[in-house]
Amino acid sequence: MIKLRRTFEVPYKEYTLKVEQTEYASNGRYALQAYVDGDPFDTLTVNIEAYDREFPQAKVIYLNTNHCPGIKEALQDAGLIEDLGCKVQSGFFMYPVVRWLR
Image (cartoon, rainbow, N blue to C red; front, side, top):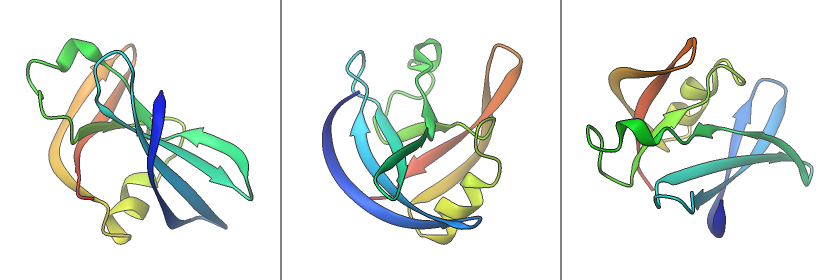
């Protein structure tokens, strides 16, 4: 990932995540990195280039609900994403496709 764009606070379970919006160097797709108290928590997105033709917009992201169950709902409640109602597969897991609203 490269260059920080913006930071948002998001309540998630017992944490207040500081979510940094950045982008993947390989394709410019948005990426979200989360921190708790300044320490890395998790990368909230996955970079699945195989679907770039189906979802070419940079603001369309694939959420890593495998690592962070409930993160989609937390980001929706914070007004940061819109669920597009579909998922993409990578390996054994299906990742929700969402639009970044900020």
